[in-house]
Structure formats: structure tokens, C-alpha cells
Image (cartoon, rainbow, N blue to C red; front, side, top):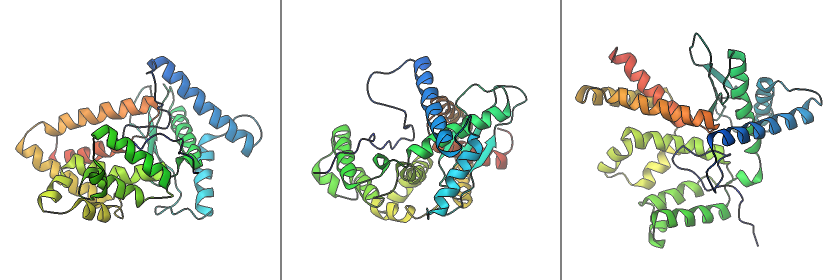
Length: 290
């Protein structure tokens, strides 16, 4: 009899994180302490097994980890390079984003007084997630799919018929999970980011109005990378909205900033809100000062 996966249910909102456990909510101070302990434990363990002494250079270790995955045959369409992006600032605290080869994004989760420290903090949380993501419990299996669908049915009061119909939200969710069997949670989250952006941008609604079925949309975008062309098209949509309702981009930027900050301090994956902000900033660059 197969075991039920130990990993948490898939979070389709973009707000989930591997350190977010069910149960009573922790105070911010306690949550930060737990986060720091978990990160340090992974980094110390990585140091012990790779260099065998002292502190590990987490920036080098993270790059080495993804180079190792590439060497072992991982499908990394954009290569194994880990990309860092510092937030412009003339004074502390400094913040740095780190984007992994698949697209997952993390950021500095500590209060850093130097740019180098901010870069190391981002690398730490990304390294921990990268290592933990290799655990078998983070793989999408048929047992996991059954568990996730049952949880979704309870949350949204879906029926067995909805689960089998690819034109319902529950059916589309099942279709996406089954199309990603044996992939990791980070890989699945990278795919989900595309659909979250399409929903946020109103593209999914427009497709439904053109009588595109959910299954057709899922099948198409499951193989479509989030690229500059897609971002540019979304930016044009927001330019049109701004011209119809002045101030809408400013409000969306404010919301995206709040989401990024909350996810950053909690050590959660934050590509979805960061992509939203990048798309909105691209729209601003073409509109001029708002």
C-alpha cells in the first residue's frame, strides 16, 4: 500500500512556502527565528558534506548545486546560471533577489547592512529550497494528486463530476497535476506562475469569452515559457487599462510591493508578485511618470 505524501497541499495562490506548516499561527518573531534556524541547518549541513570545514560560501554552493543538476541531465531550458538582482538603494537595509534556473525566485529574508550580506541571505534561502525540493516528498505522484484533489474538493465543495470535467476549475487543476507527474513542487509552482499571471492580467477571462476550453488553455500554456514577449503583451494590456482608468497601475504596484515584502520576510517563493511588478514597471516605462 503506497504512502500518502508528506508534503503540504499545492498552493495555487503563489503565497505558499515550504516553511509554512499547518496548525496554530506563530508570532512574527518566532516565525523568523524558526526560518533562520532552518536555513542555517541546511547551510551547515551542506558545508559539512561538501567542503568539510567551517562556513560555506552559499553563493558558490547554490551555483554549484544547479551545475550539478545540469550535469546529471536536469532539463534546464535557460541553462544552470543563477541570477542575482539587487534592489537599488543608497542605504541599508539592502535587498537582493535571486532567480533559479527554472524561474523560481527568492529574496533576502534578513535585515542586511551590506549588499554582499543581502546577496548571501538570498542565496541561503534559495539553497535551502533547492536542496529540500530534491526530497521524494516534494515530487508530484499519483497518491499526491489524489490527496490534493480531495483537499480541493473539500475547500471548494466540488463534486466528483467537476473533478472529471476538464472545463471546471477542479478538472483543470487535476489535468495540470497529471500532466506534471514526477516533477517537483518548485517545477509545478513555476508552471502555476504563468497561469496566475494570465488570471491576474485578465487573459484567462478573455480566452473563455472566445470559447476556449480550460483544457485547451492549460495544454497550450503548459508548454509556453514566461518570456519577454508575454510580459510585453501584458504590459500593453495594463497601458490600455491605465488610459481608461487613471491610477490603476499605481494601485496594482502598491499591492505587488506589499506581496513581495510579505513573502520576502517570510522566506517564501515570490516570483508571481515580482513578475507582476516587473510587468507594471514595463508599462510605466512606456507611459512615462504616473
